[in-house]
Image (cartoon, rainbow, N blue to C red; front, top):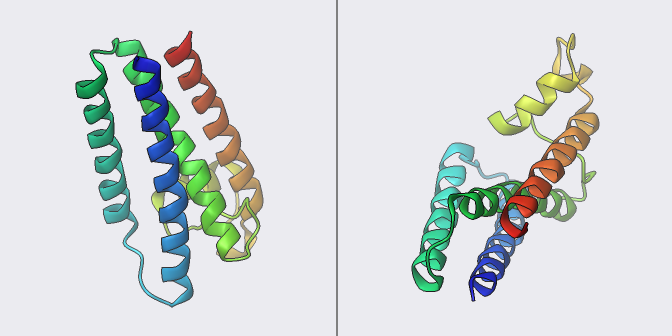
Length: 146
């Protein structure tokens, strides 16, 4: 029964990622401001509430499963959100933006020595982001299902 709850939660989180990626892309294309911190807090809160609902409906989970589910949710969301955001905007799937803290982290570790914005290799930062998210997603799967 718990596996149904886990799959339901993951499905809801991934649907949210695709929907929110599309929403943000359309907002950006209209030229409107995106409050990245507020957006992150609202989305993270929704994922936590969804996880709490799954736990209350489908029974207690071990700490290991909750941690795994959290990794799957967070890093699966991030990768799907970025992919959809970039696809709708007709950008490279590896594009990351220096306008938010999360992406800036990957820009900073892949562009050591770059001083000006035009010197950044945005696509290499995006590749590292996807690799990192893939590894942490996989760790989450192992923790959750093994």
